[in-house]
View (cartoon, rainbow, N blue to C red):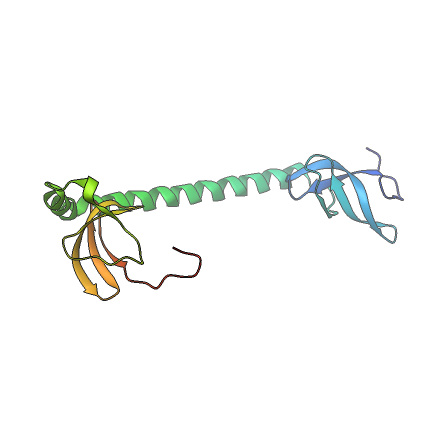
Amino acid sequence: MNAPTHYSIGDEIDFFCKKCRLNLHGNVAALHGDAVAKVTCRTCRSTQPYFPERGEEELRAGLLKRAFRIRDRRQQQWTDTEKARTVAAESPDVTRRWREATENVNANYARKYSEVGSFKEGEVIVHGTHGLGIVVRVLHEQGILALFRKAELPLPMNLPTTEGEK
């Protein structure tokens, strides 16, 4: 497209869209004197400051940089997941203790865990995230230690209710 020396609002212009990350066609949305200040992308319909088109090498370098960032983030997530699996595999004691504690338990009589509830040692609870558990010990007036299949966790109890809760 030939670049005119003078633009008016609504004229078509080639520019670099920051949202699409591509060189695209757009319409002039605002002018500052004779210079284009803002454009509206015809693809994503966003209005943004005007950036001149980028060269092919610059676009390719940006795409590669973004791809490598995504790859590195995924590798880090994979590494973190593997570490968590290793830690869980190295602590079979928790799972063994949970199995022994819940062997003769009828889950139908388990109480749903709630931070506002009060629990006793040996009581069977059902937690929304961790599942079936046993109260191992009452730590203090507002806390218990509960044993679940994969972890032994401190949980709050006897917390005051707020106006929105029942």
